Figure 1 (cartoon, one colour):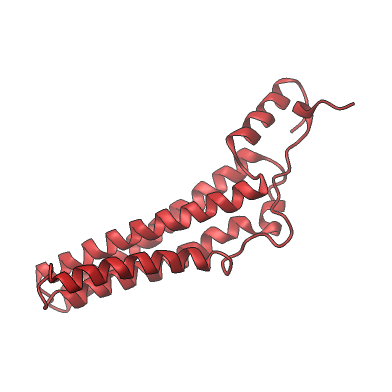
Figure 2 (figure 1 turned 30 degrees about the vertical axis):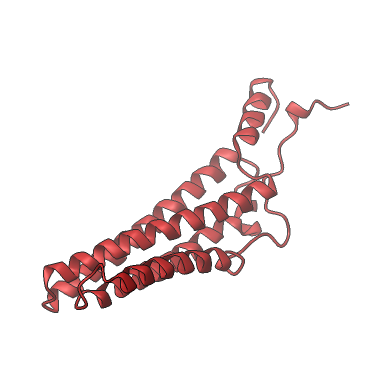
Length: 178
């Protein structure tokens, strides 16, 4: 009988694992939340009418950047991509962390380009600030929703979890190959 601590955990995504298309509902949920919040701000008149279009522009830019980030995040869910890393949970976790960082840099690039574009067009500071705050709020909401979806999709597959990392470490300490 084999010892479960010496077995390598299954870390490859299951056939038919979630892809960017499967993560689209998470992005749509984020868009609905952002749209609801933006509509609430619009209806209450919390912003001056002249800056309201910049709120919409900031939220839209964040949704676009998040869409590209979700496409990058889904790369870690691709079975061929995970297969190229073998069964090393630390390597897979590192790649996932790297993809999340690239997604964050993509959003930072998008907000920077947006602000520079608005400033070069001679837009007043309060409108640029509205764009930036709306972008940050929408990006945060979408990041939480997309990250939650990624966690659920990897947890359902039994991918990189604290349990699989602990099992791999215990197997390595026992002299078993991981």
